Length: 313
Image (cartoon, rainbow, N blue to C red; front, side, top):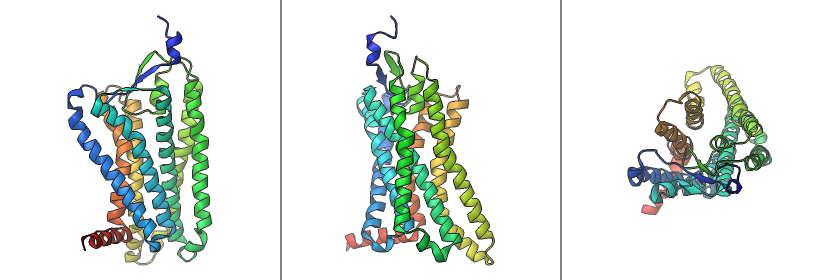
């Protein structure tokens, strides 16, 4: 039977958990649920602390709020399909629902990359121009940065779903993960995918690619400024203000690079390794960011402890 018959108008897409471990899905779902609960609770706590404490209404914490909102969006976007696979073994997902999930996953990933870049700019200004910090990063500038991030994200992500919808697929398409990604959907196409492939590459170059270069440049300038300080204690103190952000950058980019390397060079690797790396890429940043900022940022840590002590009292 030809794949281009009427059934291809409504192709079926099947999600994949951990191949070969279907009998252990109930057990596997426990750590995944814990990760989601901690991620949502942690990021919600960060937002609550910043919103209710007026002393934290500063540029650094506004950007941290953007990061927490992005992580909440990323967590809630991937949660439904993962739980449907691991709890109910419900693998089928409608094509339009798959495109919608893909749209939001890539949207929040691009936003997170841009917010991390904005936070690097914040640290750069704070270290190089401490006396002009409040006059450079005004509320208007921060709002403009937020609008620029949203505008770039919509411009880059919006065409993706339409390009994928124009392709033709097999009647039944087995995806590689328990969520929908552009690079996974495009592999399922049986018609020419050249335009979609070029589009995907351009999105990566003008989002994560560009952001990573600017991040590196920001830290080169930060390091040059720090090394120019006369006192060793001042250098250490200044670098400590960047530790949380460096951890967030590594938490975001390391799994992404690992997933890309596995997809490109790990053809002989077990499918479980591919699935595990994809899950790490989407689950770890929302989990680790609130933990890192709660532990390493004194102002956040003290206010969280104060809230808990007040509740106990």
